[in-house]
Amino acid sequence: MELSYDEVRKIAELAKLDLTEDEVKLYAGQLSAVLGYFKRLQELDTSHIPPTASVLPLKNVLRPDHAQPALTPEQVVANAPDADDNQFRVNAVFGDE
Image (cartoon, rainbow, N blue to C red; front, side, top):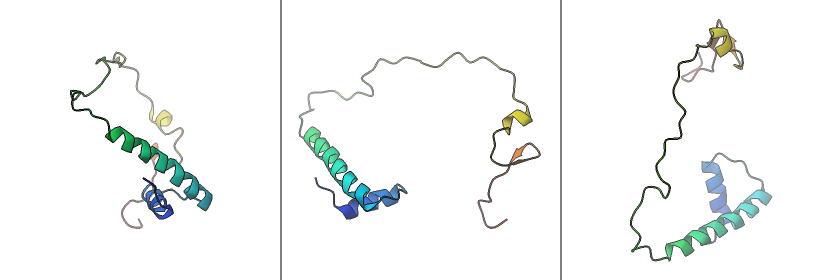
């Protein structure tokens, strides 16, 4: 399946990407190749393969949960781009407040 440049621009717009014309041409070819590979995979007969959630054995990879001393409010906001009185300051979400 060959993607047109307009289709690549639409995909980029949905992904909030600002692409140059050279990038549109490059990605059109790359995405078309990926879609062609998926088309080949869809032609395989998988009717004899049972559905599976994972090909890997289930294993818990989380570390044990141990209580640690809490951070101080000063430590919490130490790297914040904007803070006031140990609170994060963010732009208003609703309206101009």
